[in-house]
Length: 393
Image 1 (cartoon, rainbow, N blue to C red):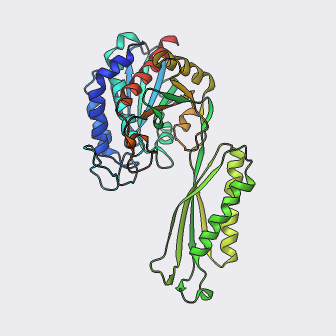
Image 2 (cartoon, helix red, strand yellow; image 1 turned 45 degrees about the vertical axis):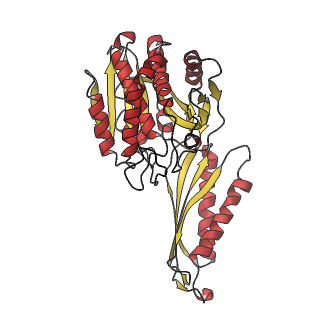
Image 3 (tube, rainbow, N blue to C red; image 1 turned 90 degrees about the horizontal axis):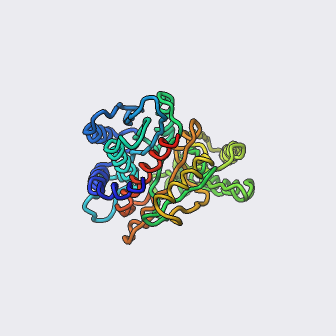
């Protein structure tokens, strides 16, 4: 099994081609039709692989060597983000305002590589491997929940599932793990404020949704600093505030949107109650009509403790002692968490930082890139983990 890294290195030119093609033609959540077609085309070159569409734009691919053997699942997400890519790299996005800024192009290329190695070496394992090419990780309700509703984890007896995510905080060749709660739950907040509008010279005649909205946002930060247990990580961020058309007009409307990230369900619900109370009471005080809505988000991502310990042992065997880092709590969210509510799950962070500064930039930024040597490591990791688990089951 220790030869998987060498096998993946040989496959690297294909991995780079797949990743760069996907990077040049990114698609937003629930719109991944060309991505779906590309995946189906590439996988159809492998004989005896079972392919079907799922969750609209997703793909499920099954490789089976023994129908009576155990099953595992591996997942990659496919969607891009609404960002304009910067930089002059040859494989820059050809679609204005859309970019693979979170590495999902890399995740998809890696899982295509895993499919190839599993198919090539069918004599080395027994059972079944379900490859889940999932749409819409970036947009609630998330493609994972839709795939689960369609039976992706129930149609065959999945014993465990793994996923990975590119991580510029770690260098190529290193990975990160954390057992138990790992990534935060997230909820979207949408607030619409309405007033009569008026002239900027006469503020006493028109309640101002901009001032009231700004006051709301400031007040809500006290939820984190004063209502939350400081031992319970909480992040409240407002990323959208839209209002107005001219500097001398008090607008009739304002729109505010943000995210709440938490790790504990009781506090998650209480925090939402406080957000609602502050927004509604503040609006009422200043004569503003308000509607406050919460979009159901993703639950806390929990890495199954014993499965994570098993995974750590096998990753160290593959990559070498010291190559697996213990990670802190991660405040970002992932709909991979839904899979972990159904079967034992483990989410791995794959180091992708190299010498280029762009490979060290945070995800969700318009200059983000990866060191493509990491693609081979991703393929070797998932292949090694899946086959060892099947052969030990």
